[in-house]
Amino acid sequence: MAAKVLVVGSGGREHALAWKLAQSPQVSAVYVAPGNAGTSAIAQNVSLDVTEMRKLANFAEQNDINLTVIGPDDPLAYGIVDMFRARGLRIFGPTRASAYLESSKAFAKQLMHEQDIPTAPYRVFRDYAAASAYIRECTLPLVIKASGLAGGKGVYPCPTLAEAEQALTDIMVRHIHGQAGGKVIVESFLSGQELSVHAICDGVNAALFPPAQDHKPIFDGNRGPNTGGMGAIAPVPDVSPELMRNVQRLVIVPVLDVMRRRETPFVGCLYPGLMRENGSTFKVLEFNVRFGDPEAQAYMRLLQSDLYELLAAAADGALGSQQLAWQSGFAVSIALVSAGYPGSAIATGIPISGVAEAERLSDVVIFHGGTVLTDKLRTNGGRVLHVTATGATLEEALERGYRAVRLISFEGMHYRTDIGAQALARMR
Ligand code: AMP
Ligand code: GLY
Image 1 (cartoon, rainbow, N blue to C red):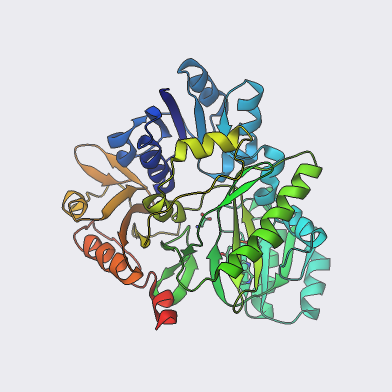
Image 2: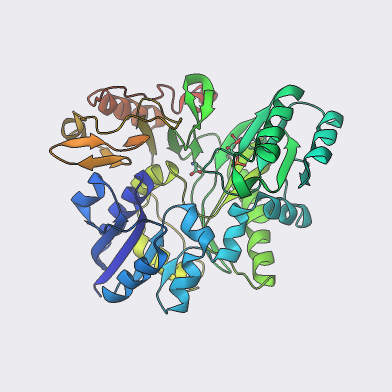
């Protein structure tokens, strides 16, 4: 068989997925819409935006695409899977109704509550006055969240009542997130280690990836505003098999069961973000219905199973009890970001140097995010490059990754120097 695959998205996650799909002996061509400079080197870029759903479906139909894989959350929330399926096109991802798990935090919290899935205590509000009265009765710190998709910017950790009040005013009075803030969640602040779990689901069964850890804040020491993710490690060395069994039993299985009972079976990558408490207990912070970015970049460096076979089987509801094969050791992904990120004034068009030199290092692969190839390679977004490396130990993978990072430069380039540092410290 010579399968053609379309990956939808333009970040490091999509570059990593396209890179891995291209390695499948079953795949003859990979297309990425819209892609970036990195994907154009390993696949064919298609100049369609991720939300041009009808045009994407037309492209898949006209080019005999055997499988479409969706990277980001927006097209899933808009129903791209429903549209492809209605046209008889095979696609990996959840339908609009199952994507509510990510696109409505109020829905996700309600479902967790009903299924006894461990999560922070919470209340949902539509009315500003009621929410404002409620926060005065709560124990601080609190977290206030816009229920809908807000580009990763709708979550406000609030150490003080004044900050909680400000968050409510911004979301419910000033409407800075528009409709996404129509419902607001007020929940208890949880502390601990964050953990990412990915489960490839076919509606009934799930194949779990090893645990990964993202590093969201922009600066070392987890300071500064949250970003899309500044770096990831996988697996996380001090996560017990018991914790992962508990995630499967207490989170993944109940979600799959209830979604099936609701007649919205979950097909796609179910990625709960967890807060680890101690040992084998945890609480679910949120559900995502897609691969994590930058988790996917680290995962794809370690996955030995055929990604095309895996995602096609899940899309067909035929995962069975498939076991995944992983390379031993660790993978890390370090994001190199533009000046101004994660704010809105991001410098672009800046020449990048050193990528070819860095790529020559052994066990290093560089996935592109916001890059464009004009006269030379230039920056074209917030997270520009994701430098990945593997090693027998986490220390070795980090050492290789940072050696590659130091060869690359562009004006205003910033990266965290402490990806994986907490995990290493916990091991000592
Ligand atoms: P979410 O989009 O709900 O995952 O929130 C984004 C980020 O906010 C998470 O990755 C956490 O870093 C943080 N966060 C969300 N909920 C909580 C909570 N209840 N306590 C502490 N941090 C949280
Ligand atoms: N790793 C963060 C995200 O993909 O949402």
